[in-house]
Length: 274
Length: 51
Image (cartoon, rainbow over all chains, first blue to last red; front, side):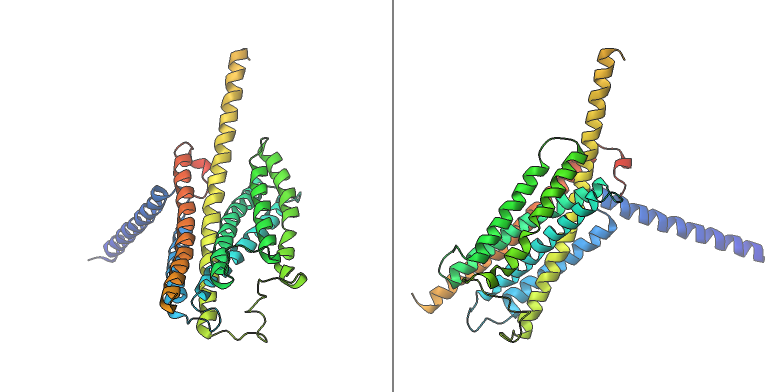
């Protein structure tokens, strides 16, 4: 066979394999679009990583980590409690940073506002779960679901503040007005986080101080530390996944509202004969 | 109350915490996906630049 024929055949084979690869990519991408319009290959990988880390959290948190010499089995609740409160703090921090970016003249973009809103919403869920897990742990350790301890009370106050932030986001006005208004509230609300964190040092109460950071007081078992680490990873991945999807849902919601407004204006113009 | 009964009660509370956390997270994720699907059906592709 002449050389030209061989190279032509090679080219055809390459083209065919390129086309097959492209078709496979397109099929994968359209399957992601079909399964979730807010999803991308990245969020899909993130979702799988979240599921795996959650399964590991259950395995280590419920079965492999040892029981505590003082708290007994109830220490297993802390793998949920610490992970969820960590994500709630991160979420409210992200809300504040995104709000700052929205207010800063050079970066003003509604995407920042939507990230702030999405992050606060997810943070409120995790704060609710923190309070729930804390109440259960309190029932087992202190004999009561609720005590008016400084840390518990300030955490509940933080939770209510961010519910207020979400209510402010739901008020009327343009998207820019919503962004400015809620960004100011977010920057004020985030000031509560240091108060919650240091409340155990500022006031005497039942809630314990940090156990992981202060190694002079408590020496944690390696498996307990590893379970806590898995918990932080799992809840952080879940947080990123939820915020990415929610931010895209909010973007579509804004786009639809804009289209509705354009349509209403068009109708008014046609009614007025303009 | 015997130690075994106390331990069983603890297990119930611990499981309730894990179940509530996972159910809460899955419910929020499902709500976002369902809402996204509903909104995406009403919008053209140019309003979904990540797709």
